Length: 235
Image (cartoon, rainbow, N blue to C red; front, side, top):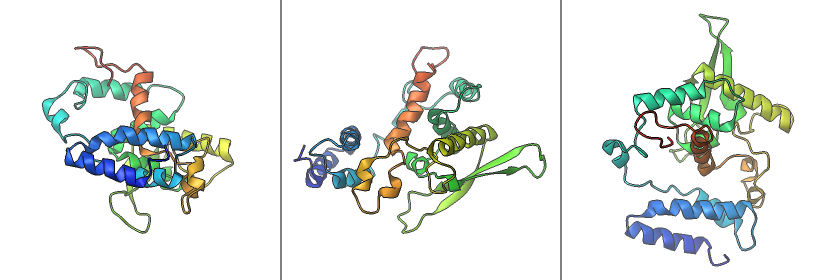
């Protein structure tokens, strides 16, 4: 493991680029970050934090969508209806439900969900229907390389807002009251690797992008959400 420093990662990345296979780096990176979270001997915190910030392209863009692939392509109308029905069913709020609802509402990059904090959540009475609530999120913009935090305010579905509201309340109950910089998708155990690198301590409680991806994927699996009709493949 001592040999898997930044230079090794850069060499592997370059080799995969030459083969048009850089997307394969995703799985190896997740493995290394998992070991970093466990603080295994030989894993360098600085290396883990650097490669975590790399933007790694996905596989061939649009191929699954254009081919209407039943496993990796877009949801059809019946699948989308089944997903919405599942999301709005009465259930204890979970991070997986919240992440999936935000994907439906906003179609965000997972990194944007990682960076959502309490200060980004807003709720108020609807001026036209005071008995109802309006929910909005200041969604962090992560594609621009800025030296400051920039957000864009987006309106979200009331059902999504209600779930986020309960998750924030649970975070406050478990972790000691309101905190503007606390992530909405908040860990119950900090990532020790962040405390070892200057400037990263405040992100110790944030989920990673790959973990957000897993929340969404596992939500469908845990609820046995199947494609209706022509098979029983999970979404």
